[in-house]
Image (cartoon, rainbow, N blue to C red; front, top):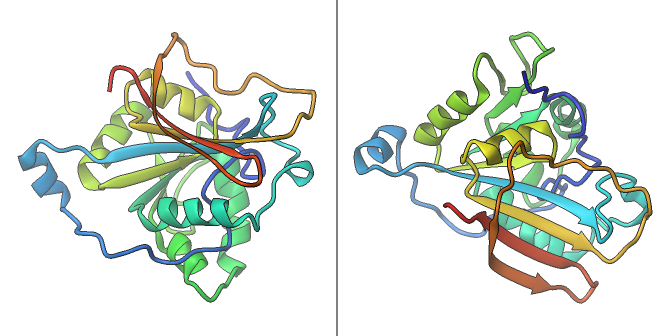
Length: 219
């Protein structure tokens, strides 16, 4: 059985979760029933940060939370989301960090209010911080969530992300590649089978960061 409790620390490459933000516009929300009737599924986006040599952690050496272009991406990703999908370690860290945060643009309030779904083989419910434990088959649970929500974001790059990619449940992968070499990369996003990606968009920031947006080739 896949485990979702390791390799998903929020310090370690979780893109789009920062104490900054502002609304980027009003979205039209379609209910889950309407989406099912229209044959439209919600979108799942995996987002993370990494160095050029594939390191996701030790972010104190290479990650600048104040980078204005990263803040803009964070705004767009989080304010556009209806729900959050997390592994256990990300959930436990965020649960301790975010409820105490405030900002003048409403980012923390918005993120705290989002419904969270936690994939874990070790936690037991009920969970706090507006979170629900996914019990049973994770892939099937995410299929149901796609009927319920328009946009689901998942932060991290570990076992949960790998299973979702392998199950064909990921619509986009957002990778922020930072111009830094740490030298002790670990293999994190290991899918059971090879998965081809097609490039949707790429931006080079003044700071040297490359923001790449991919979709699985089959989607």
